[in-house]
Amino acid sequence: MNQSGSDKGSATRNRARDIVVYCIIGLGVAGLGVFLGNYDADHEIGSDTQIRWIAAIVFTAFVFGFGARRAIEAKLRHPRTFWGLLSALAVVHGSLLAASAKITGSPPLSLFAIVAVAEIWLFTFAVKKCAS
Image (cartoon, rainbow, N blue to C red; front, side):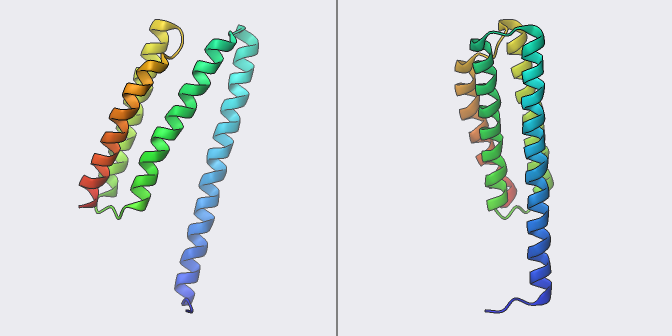
């Protein structure tokens, strides 16, 4: 099965775009690691708190990655609505994380178990609504 020149060009552009996105994500993760390492060295943060923050960051990446993956797999008729909702949920998620960390000093992991179920449900709901 031969692809036309237009299909090959489109596939190459999509691959190039994906590689750029992965590089940006990789640089962000590496930058976060350097920041956290320097912050820890300057403020003498305990290992228990470090583990909680790392778990919260990995957990957040998993949950929002799940939402993005669901959107990419689905044929969204209203992609702006979905990405707007995903962005709003990211702001709410970050606000809850910051507020809980300010109150308790580190992210409470039990809260994330509850939040994860709610966010995954909301992502699934949003994908279904935006795909129809």
